[in-house]
Amino acid sequence: MAVVLECRNLRFTYRQVPVLEHISFKVHSGRFCAILGRNGSGKTTLLHCLNNILTPDSGEVLVHGQDIADMGQNQIAQKISLVPQEHLDIFPYQVIDVVVMGRAPFLRLSQRPGPSDFKAARQALDFLNAGSLALKNFNQISGGERQICLLARAITQTRHLMLLDEPTNHLDFNNQYHLLSAIKSLCRSKGISIVATLHDPNMAALFADDLIMVKNNTIMEQGSADETMTKKNISALYDIPLGIVKINKQKKLFFPESILSEPMNPTKTRNEEDKGDH
Image 1 (cartoon, rainbow, N blue to C red):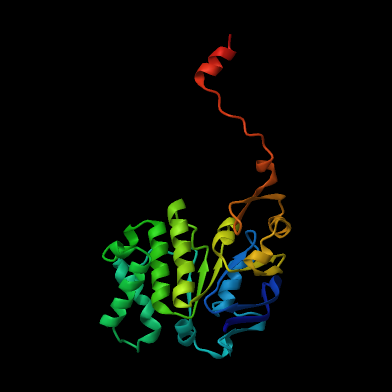
Image 2: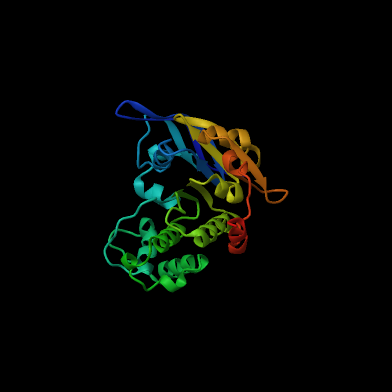
């Protein structure tokens, strides 16, 4: 299996304060790699170092064996797309125009997108079951719908590597599963490698192939989801005692032990409460 992304001994500081140290890992083609860690652990900073938005103090980031430090921004954009956690209102473009912006790295200066570019944009929206949004004003749709559209733009931009910063952050329960299922399908059907920061370890347990656990400015654990998603590791990562609930032979979910140990008292009916009052 080909290595799409390799991070070698990356270090990043902010105002001389270490944010990331000794970060080394590989991402293989067609794999969904989730980055887990508590708030402030450096997950977003790591994503920004991976596509050269931020410049590490030391270390290397290689895409298909090439150091991104030797690549121009346009060349990086042809190989790596980023879906940020937060997005500001932009000019009142239609959604289809926002999605087709993903083709910008492949266009010459002043060149306009052509029919093939718009076709790719529509196919990306359709893949995410969001084709009905194509002609809507991007600024007037919900935050969750915007996130889906930005993912469609990332699909339109590259088939190599996608970086997603909390992709389910603005989504309701239904759309969280829909989006992560679509991400998993991108890996399987199109061979795209995806690195995504996630808050919820249960979402990672259900969908991720590989995990990187970040704590105290460095990688605490990494490996396949099956190997690393243990009660010991997740409890240590989030500093809370956790228990496991198995939902089938392959899948398990994590919950605080304090919740799992609480007795389950059935709710009394009104008649039972009335009898108890006499």
